[in-house]
Length: 463
Image 1: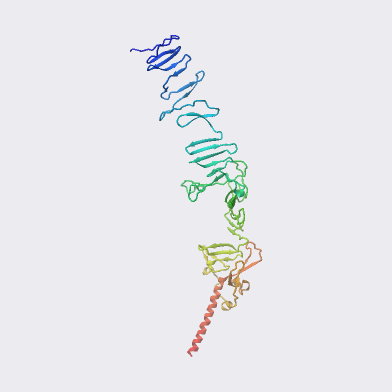
Image 2: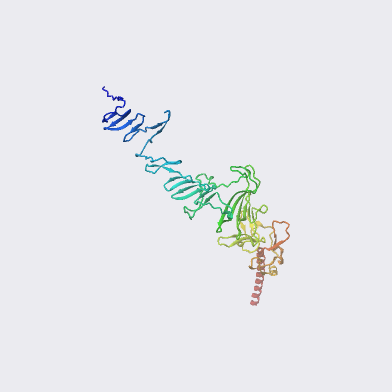
């Protein structure tokens, strides 16, 4: 096999007469060059500097361009990525930058030194960006999508959604909130101010949670026992009076007893703001035992439902039907008015074993010592019906005066204050249902007399 060798001979300061067509040659004193197509392409000077004369230097297969340290023990390498979709040329700036500047691109491969703002750092993609801003007094973080700010964490740590300005005029202008959501939409609009919490789970005992919690500690992460009457959470409903937000109603959860390990008795308190007032007062509460108190803060005795009328109310409790008519009510005198019984004054209700309310005790099952009544027409004749206006209602009615009623069996007595067993003041009421039987008896007596008279008249006419 034949071999071809190229040998360079050092002629000292001798220089080749001309550049060879292809190959190495001595282009200057102590300088070696390589030519192609009769043109010098590459040379190494007497000081070791290598120069590419025209053309490009390509390192194939992710070859490194290595820059070694002073003793050549370590290096820094520049390497191309494993895959390049198209050729990329990075053009360096024509001069050095200043202290603190960064090398940035214009997106077309031209690099330049750019001053980075010390008051704004952004991550930007199109018209969507996340930005950290710190001016020294208003540091905040915000997120913008489609050119509109969506949420912000301000310098006070408040999370603002749909707005960039926090409100500090709640509770009559004395409070703010750490999380605030604002919107201008309505109905199902995407811009409506709403908070949605959804739990996706097919277990019927699982749902989404909205947790209010309270610890009596004074530091973050504390776990200190709470005390009786301590507030655990408050939902407040507020409206703007033109300059500030004022409470209209609230729902509060409080400790309702002495708490302990795995023992946390609680109550719910519902409050409303009266017309002309600026803060809510308690209207209803549900105790730890499930008792309901309306208009009072403590249930009466062992009653599961306790109701107190307002200072100006005539009725304590009332029920309306679907048409809006009152069918059942208790007034401040303790009288029960039940329109469905067909009466307008106090009466007695009978509840059967099946839970049904009967108009009267008609069944023999509720009676004993049954016999004929001893009053009839003469009793009815002795009654003194009157007309009157019920105090407090202004409504004219007809009836009887209980204190003047001739038979005490028709009169019932009740204390003004049922909760006070020592109350001496009694309220008398007539049981109008009991009048039905004497009226029937009187009518029977009258019919007997009529029949007797009719028989006598017929006998006289026949004579």
